[in-house]
Image (tube, rainbow over all chains, first blue to last red; front, side):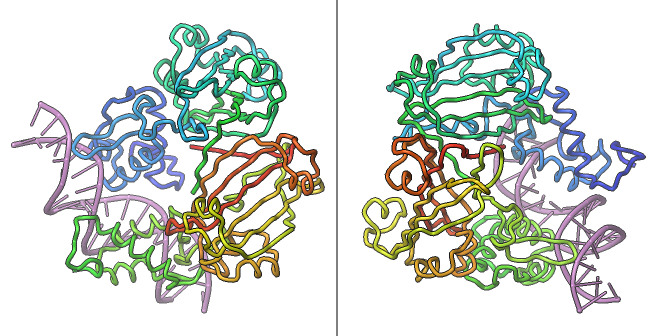
Length: 244
Length: 244
DNA sequence: CAGTGGTCTAGACCACATC
DNA sequence: ATGTGGTCTAGACCACTGA
């Protein structure tokens, strides 16, 4: 018995099947970000498992950042607007420890994926994409980062125009709010490179200056690649990383 | 009742106090890496808590990588020799995806910490340190990484000579095996830099070539800084990062 | 075979938030 | 006052390991 896989009890633990089903329901938009999810006992009853088992499933959702649990209040769908860890995916600092603050959108166009872009996004050539050129500056200082972003516009229809109109500070919040796409993982390759023409123009550095280059793909909960970006960081910036 | 904080029941959960006590005992060397820890029921009895509570404490130790649990076998102290994730702290790849393989120790001396080194290690100037210069090469290819390492020799007496004698492949395994020091966290700052004289000599690049620079401090379980290293990566190498 | 950790149940009491 | 999640207990059965 149980609501999940009534017949196909494939041997996987109950709490895992329950967790997967909850992930599916959250992804489907059954509850909006910030909204209260049914309580432990209610979910346990609905899935016909014990409270302890339901608890284990919900705990895992909380651990992966999907929901937010608070004693006395309840469990709510997590949002990127009020993240437990702000700046989770923003790892650049000035060498004296400050973060970048301002975002300026230099270009924002809708187009079709080139062969290279298609390969990086894992889609077919010609898929609708938005291309965004963005510059971030250090507080009080000069230009800091130049970001070339390619976004899957087939998954976020109208994103290009919307970004140009609203100039969102954070792209992941923008995706969450407007398209219910939750970025949960990024893969990065970090290299030393030299400043190109665009860097020279927008980062206030001489052509050929060594710059830090970060190639990054962002994946949503379903494991789909949502965007690819290449970031160049001006001298005086570094990438801060901490691993356990 | 309970073996921990018999009177000073400070209100912290039982499983947390138990976990902290187990961490303390592991750090003290009560069990050697790879050795079997008492079973859940035995520990539960010893701490006078229920099995579920003991389980929660041990689970957290496993999650932070301190112990390794296997059904049927038991719980063992984790080792850096047989890590669940090999290359946990080795993130460099060639641009076609291969790892570095060979380690060559170019220099290895014992000395006293300079002011700069002392600040980075969080110790007083003049503390005993070992300085290590190491080069890694790409499989089949040329020189890949040049590492300048400063190690707290007051915590690892004789480490300098021992490294020179044994040329360990992995420094964290070396520290684990010889001094029971477990590296559990690294903090890094990644920059673009230019090749200096040592890079030119050992990495086979021209002076002034852009290189990737990683400044890294390694911390053990007690939060002590064990080593600082500055790594320069030759062109054709990148740093791979994945975050959730 | 005995012992281990992995899963699951069915309760209890508590601190806390909200109404 | 009610309901929430956080902690804790005391069992049960199972899959797996090793002797």
